Image (cartoon, rainbow, N blue to C red; front, side):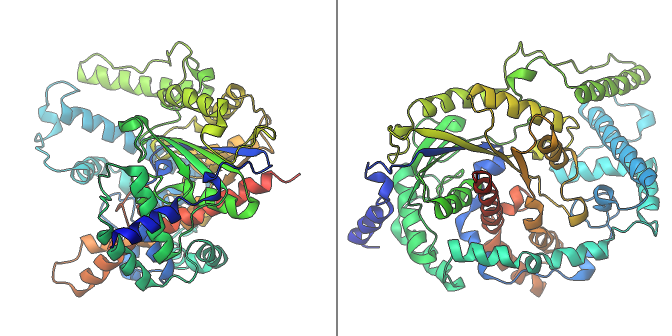
Length: 538
């Protein structure tokens, strides 16, 4: 690309009205976006290509088959979480699922040597070579040995169970039809008039620009170039009234590692790289379109973090919730029994003892948030001191690392109350994005995390100020299926090339982070934004 054209694109990207420091005359709305890796943002921008395509329809026979032992992508075994039958059977499945986890933990300890010397009664000592898939398969074989999966199958196969692989398959392939209105709306906002071929010209233009998309040494400058190219070729917008300040594991030039900070007019590229997005882009852009601003997004996010520990509020620094205490005592009882049988000292879990301190994410986030609140004009040039600023909401998108956390709802209630107190915003609207991985309509807002969010939204202290957006309705399960099917095909199978092309265009991260699908993040972010804006109405 010619230097003159590149300079023009840079100027275009930096020509947001917010950069001209002219007060808007309206109070600045400040919105916090907090969470773990899916809030950091792992979806490559060019996977928005999938929004220009019809939904992939995986073959029925590949989807409804049953694997030997548990595989979370297997629709048959998904019935454990989504069972729709008698309550006593559902309760029994819960017990068996816990027993599966306990046995896997026990065998993992044995393999690692944490349960004393390997005993002959355990069989031949394994020499496991490989990653998580190899180890996980071996552990589930040990679970199968004691008949747990056999009993689970007996329950799942009962005729009164309304959740079946066949029905689940029909739900998956019909997802885009159910979301037709939302998809059309998002296409109009983010990809108006964009055709599949535009993505080819976009990638070519990026290559010719010379920016290092993987390891940028000038992330702010390269982000502006990348965003301008995306606007030119794909019509992906740059905000007119919204700025963003991102802190954590994000692409920026101030700080380093997990303490990186960046700011600017909202565009694509505020994820973990200058070519990635999380919820922030669609949340902010839809707010921008609906309200006309000015708005400042403050994003703080770190991967692999939990509400139970990393995001634990100061009010629970050395306090257990009732469910936490019961779960810890249950674990310790099992561990004591196992240790006695194995002739070793038990390794018991202790109650929280952080001396009243919040989790490490809050220890990083709160000083940063206070710095922004003290000087909002440093982060949003449209801030008018005469009009001031108002804390307008928080978006919480987190939970993958808390799936086994039964106390999630209790902890979330405390976290929201504590954070509101810390920033003196007692009625701040909160929108939670549910844990939408692998969910189905009948149980989309169930489970420890999503169910915990619903619990918080209905809590007497929070009711009417906390809402939950069901992100499961947008989960691209068919792309997960394509990845699973593709991995099992022979190298000469003609379907392999087709699936490889689909995956390379639609997926950033196979198997995790909602497949790194920009389509997913645009849909869910737009939904969250509309929910938040609705809460601002009198």
